[in-house]
Image (cartoon, rainbow, N blue to C red; front, top):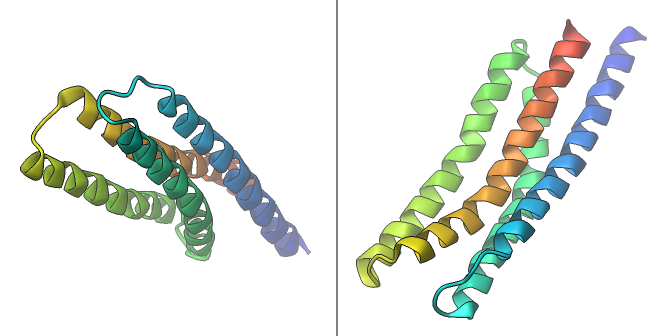
Length: 143
């Protein structure tokens, strides 16, 4: 009976973490969308859309991956590994996108910074919020 309560508590925490991270990630994406756009407005809108869609995808994917990591014995280390594994594709994608832009278009510091922030901040916030909520819940539930 106690094990069932623990499982139900973890499911409730995962659901709350997914909802909170999605809300905060979309809020961050919305705030960054309000930054001044230098150059073509269309490119800024595309960057904002990529960040918002990335937030939606990462909110769903990370809750599944974090949920699977709860099956492991050492949950604290598993959470850290999963958080780093979820951040790695974001860093690779955004860095690759910036390098490609620098190679073919050139460097524009503010536009590149805005592009980086709008694509990276929402999904990264989603992963970090879920990690922090699950870390706090693990501390309280597992002792």
